[in-house]
Amino acid sequence: MKKLTIVFGMVACIALAGSQVPFKGSLNGATVPPTTPGLERIEVSGKATELGKFDAVIETDLTQIVIIGFDPVAGLPIATLPGTIAFTAANGDEVNGEGDLTGLLNPVDGNFPSFTFDITITDGSGRFDGATGSFTGSGGQTTVPGEDNDLITATFKGTISSVGSK
Image (cartoon, rainbow, N blue to C red; front, side, top):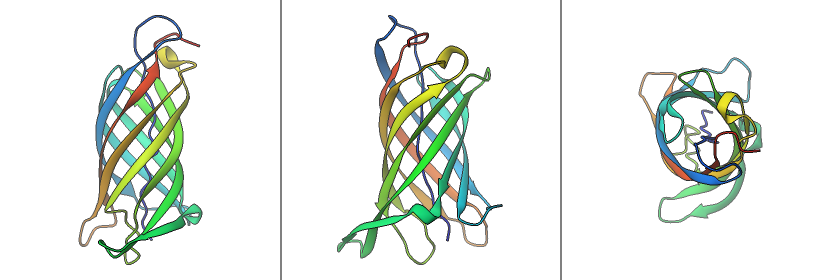
């Protein structure tokens, strides 16, 4: 069962120490065939304010999916799933986060054709050392017929602590 989790994480900015600054971006990528049963890895790239161009890895434990309701219009269950994300800027600086993805779960292929996510920025490295903040977003997962990888797209916005803030 393929599953997507976008627990997104992070970005920082130059401003007064301790202040939060706007953070928004977009990403595209694909699931990676699992090497460990129940664990999913999604590799994405994109662009975000303060972070610039980035690569990121999203990881989730598919055994943690919880059905929380049913959408009668779509005819699909609504599920939630925890996960993590690690963004790496072009210069190697990192922003990390964790949170939950919630969306429509297709029980046939395990995909989330539409989803939202809430992420808390937990830390970072380089200019993002000690970063805090949060962001929300939305996206979708599309199955590619005949392929082992699903395509992922998402946009997000929130805030992150300014560069050098603790």
